Image: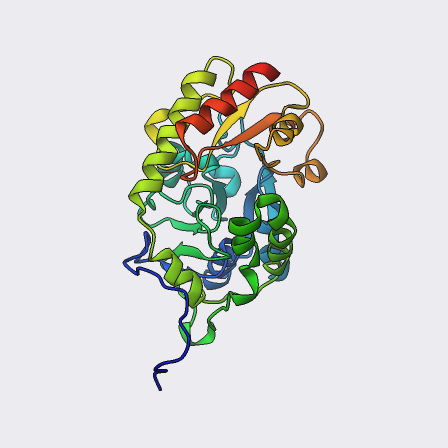
Length: 317
């Protein structure tokens, strides 16, 4: 029965999600697991340069996998003859590789796209694609999946998020440093979760977002940083692929930049330390992990914030 009266809950101005036709699940890695199970996949090709959580579903399902390298343009060094009929997982790095994906979708028979870093990029028709919501917005979990093979929906329970929101509230009231331990704790709770439908809390939060504004701000901030850093950036960036990107990826061979930025309260992650355990010292993936700086450009920040980042970087460089 409907509950009437009592105390007030959080209020959301519900509209529509950005991916209304996708399957809404609890995590991106579980979107990947959904594809593996629904398509009964026995072997898959994986990039060395990816987060280690993507191995969770592979290990859980005991699926054979083979790594492949990427080149200096972040494109896969693998051909269709090598992969045969086995699927290839490719990451839309920083949300900037849509042209590559369009080309790969014609090259590989079974392509799976990890759009965890590309929330705003559209799915290529008939290509399995998944997205992460929490990498772009203030939600504790949540992901979207496009696929043409489905698991029985009555076997997938709904997730609950109420134990995972403390870091979101604390960041507002106490700041990012105070909330960071809670963020790490929340991150650990997402490990080895079963496939579940997106929680009601996350669903309501994601249907209350004005998606046009964050996209515009991300692109504006990205272009500002690019204009200032393009001559120093070792990565070649195609601006035609720009669509609400996740970071500005700045590749520059100098030790200590990340550490000094963090000292200046510019929080930049390392993508990804697990790469060290599966690659060789001279591999390009290790070079990326060592020297690629993902600079924040998201909807929380102004051009003044971007100018501050540039002022700090120019001092370091």
